[in-house]
Image (cartoon, rainbow, N blue to C red; front, top):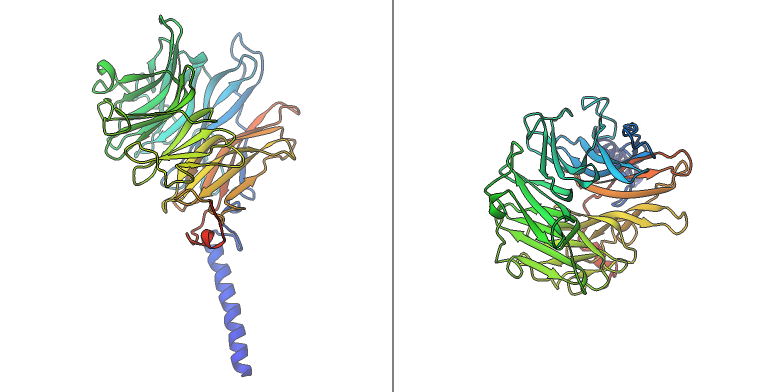
Length: 459
C-alpha cells in the first residue's frame, strides 16, 4: 500500500511538472483562462508605444498632434501591424500617417521602417483602415487633409512607399467634394475595394453619400466596376464610417448608416455583384434598409462562414443584429435577431472565431475612474454570452496608468492561434499633452461550447 501511495504521489507530481513544462513551452501562463491578458505579450499583456510627433504644419501650428491607432492586422508570420493618423488638436483635422510593426511577442520589429515605425509628415492622412496583400504589401486608406479626397497608398513589406502603385505610391480616388475613406479590403483576385463618405455642398441640391470604389492591383480605377464604368458608385443619403466586406464569390457587402428625414438614422446593408450592380437576391433589390429604434449609428460589420452578416449598433441598449445570407433578419439570434448589452461599446469591432463564436471589442465607461476601459465580449453563435470568457462573457482592462486621462479602443484582430489583439490609444492631456498607442492581447483558448449553458445562462 505504501509503495502504491508513493507511486501515485510521484505520478501526480510528474503530471504537474509535465503540465507546467507544456505551458511554458506553448507560452500559455499557468492557470490562465479565456478573457485573461496574455502575459507573454509585452509587459503583462500590454504594449504602449509613443509615436514621434510629425511637428507643426506650416501656417497651422496651433496645437498638438496625437497619434490615433485605427487599424490592426496580423501577418501570416505572426508579426503585428498597427496603422493610424495624427489628429491636429489646434484646428481639428487629420494630418500624416503612421505604421508600426511588432514582433509576435510585442517588441518593435527593427526590420520595418525606422526602428519598427513609419511616421510620415504631410497632408495625406492615410491609415484609417489597412489591408494586407498576399505578397506582404500594405494597403492603407484615408483622406487628403481636410477631407478633400479619398486617398489610397501602398507600402512594401519593409515599410517603404510602393512607387509601382498609382502615382508614386498614391491613388486619389476623387477630389470634387468633402470625402474620407474609412474601410478597405482585398478581393481574392487582388483588386482593392474601398468605401468612404462624400459630402458635396457644391451640388444642387447638396447631398451626402457612401462612396464605394474598386481599384486594379496597380492602383488604377477599375473601369469594369460601378456607375458608368468609373470604378466607383454612390449610395445616396449615406453617412460617416461604412464598412466594406468581400465574399469569397466576389460579391461586395457594404454596412453603414443612412440619414433619412423623419426616420433618423437607418441601417443600410447593400450587396453588390462583382461588376457593381446590386444583387437582387439580397434584401429588397439588393439592399436592407431598416430603422432600429434606439440606435444612433451602424458602421461595424462582419461576415460568418455561412454568409450571415453581424452588425454592431451604436446605442445604449442595442449591441448586435444578425441577418441571414439573403438579407432577412435572423430571428434565431439573441432575442428576435438582436443582442442587447448592458453597457454599450464605443467604436465596436466584430471578430469571428473559427468555431463560430462572436467577439466584440471596444471601449466602455468606467464610472469609478471616469476613464474608458478596453473591453472584450464573447458570445456563442446563437448570441448567448459565453460565461466561460472573462466575467459573464466580458473582460474589461483598465488603461488608467501613469496619469492617463482617457483611453479609446478602436480596432481589433484575431491571431491564428485564436488570441485577441485590441489596439487603441490613451492620453495624458492634462499632464504633458501627449498620447501613445496601446495594444493588449487577450487569451481565447478553446472552451467547452456547452459549459456556459450548464451554468444556467438564460435569455
